[in-house]
Image 1 (cartoon, one colour):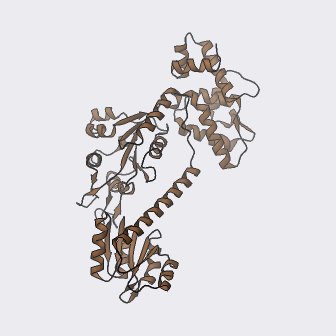
Image 2: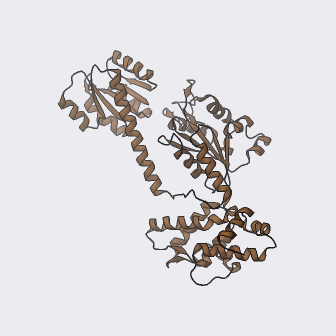
Image 3: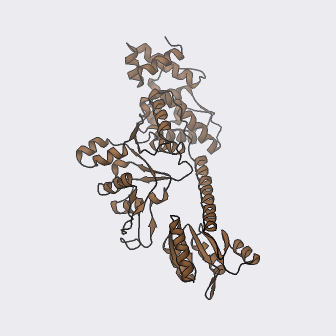
Length: 442
């Protein structure tokens, strides 16, 4: 943790600072109220030890000011003149805990452990809230390649090995990264995402590693970067192929030595993070062009997962569409529960260049425009509704499985071989044979 010690006694400041450093924490000190407020305004702190008597000021009066400047600050009040009344007042004004001087190292450890547990619980609640709001992703598939990927992701998740996730934009690489984190021993710790192409080189380095005040124009306060935020957890580097060449040696050092330095600071920081990276680029080609370091690629690519585009797994299109439909309909308060046979056929036949991301957007748009109990071709974008003109004709009400079976049957009838049909359907011949047997197609 980054901890602020506020006490007008220099011996207390030094002794407490040494004890906290010995436990692996970072500390700053302030001798008075003005100095403490300035420190809190300059940089973020996780906790503060605050003496109740600060010369002419009362720590109890300073406490609300500190919390106003940093609402999430966990303040531990300290006093040599303890009483039940002052303890109650401190808690009522927002103190996390209360310690009577002199206190033992074990008491410090105890109160900091309580802060850590509370923070983890708060982060977990926030994560669960985000999961409720976010689109769920069902890690089930009828595609053999995807099943193999899920199995490898689950097997490698408990290790600390770096994982590289490859695939086109919109294939769900970030979702797979979160799945790996949730299956790992670090699942109770932070999952922090860094979007590599989002900022300039200078700002990106600061976002990743942090910076000290005055290190560049606009650096008005000390900050800890995403690496520090992901401590003990998972650092997800999205679109790693866009990482500036100048920063690649620093990332390599983080991977190899677990060390880094904040911008403008020479002090070495140590990191305990698991790195998962993703890209839609061919990194071997980037190495050949000199835009990506080969040694960094080897460090990132301990285990690689290559996510196939949605057009290569058509058997998953309708189940995924149904997942999105069910979830989004509940969010919007709509009673649409299914796709009409014609709309479902159009979705199966469409190539989905934007992959799962495009699929979600299409379902959301269709739900907004729909006025009946099912999604109709007219609710779909023009690029999809046009597909219905070449789709095999089906009348009446059919399940998704029946529509899929009819589509596969038509393709088999038009094809000279299973291999040709599999190529048309963009699925593996083995998958097609299994489907033909399961669906009783001849």
